[in-house]
Amino acid sequence: MLIVSIETSCDETAVSLVKAKGVFPHAHYEVLGDALWSQIDIHREYGGVFPALAKREHAATIVPMLEKAIAESGVEPHGFTPALEPEMEEKICTLLEREPGLAEQLLTFHREHGAYEVDLIAVTSGPGLEPALWVGVNFAKALALLWDTPVVPTNHMEGHVLASIFDADRDDQLSDITFPAISLLISGGHTELIFMSDWGQYEKIGQTRDDAVGEAFDKVARLVGIPYPGGPEISRLAAEARKRKLPAFAELPTPMLHSGDLDFSFSGLKTAVRYAVADKTLTPDEIAALARDFEDVVAEVLVKKTCAAIEDRGAKTLIVGGGVSANQYIKRRMEAALLTALPEVISYFPPPGLSTDNSIMIALAGHSKAAGAIAPAATEVIRADGSKSLA
Image (cartoon, rainbow, N blue to C red; front, side):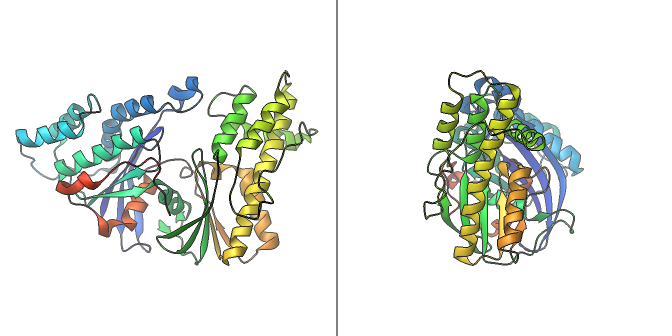
């Protein structure tokens, strides 16, 4: 099965061509082409992702990303492609009418290259920024008509789950995990604990009540003058403070650490940081110490809640996914806690390059739902849903 996967949920425009050989979850996956355009530099001046701007950039870059992924894959067009009927061109233009210039880009690409023989188009339909999601969803619908290919809408968070157990060093397969499993999904938009009884069976057992953990990292960074996206720089400074054994800057709260449930809250922690730095001009060492104090608290809360979820549900596997899963300090703290208290639990973190948003993970999620793919003429049922839940 040859899959074209599309990801536009936030500020990355990504398209991949992935060949799946076999049946999910035991298939082998070969990434033939992978293209990604990041908008981080564009959004930096706004201190975060500006939805209308993200939508515009997706519309401007999605055809070039498709073209790049196809060129990298070496896949050739499917023989002679006759000129499109006016009725088909009109359908494409109608589907993409809210994305200025996109219909003409796609139609020009089709005239120059023709149709490709693809078995499945997988596209993120949520969660995420709804204006951004619609660009990918409508593009997938238009491509489906041009190539006569079925479409499967995928959940962005399921993509993160599967990316974390995608073992590119072991024949490009998903790891053969043992159920039940707990998945901790941590990113700029989500902080969730998911119970998995089997493949595709999800139950949300904990979530943030306010800010996501990645959002908290970025907001704390902004409070000390670090530009967006500030999370990685906070982590770098925290590591420096630990290495140099800098004294504590502030005693910060550990929000909901003893709440008795599996929910999270990071808004109060951000507020405590704001009070700690109010009316002060911090030295570089003080900023580094504060970064460490903040990251220590975040790691403590994530580790304790996750271990509680594992014990409560008798899980055999832990899957950590999402952009914040790339944080090496949180990873070390989690692995150390498991080794000490739950040595029988196997943990999985995403391989390099697959922790942040990407379209390879959407191909994996799409393959898992391939049986429910929707015919090209019936894709009007596919909707973008910014708050789409995994469970």
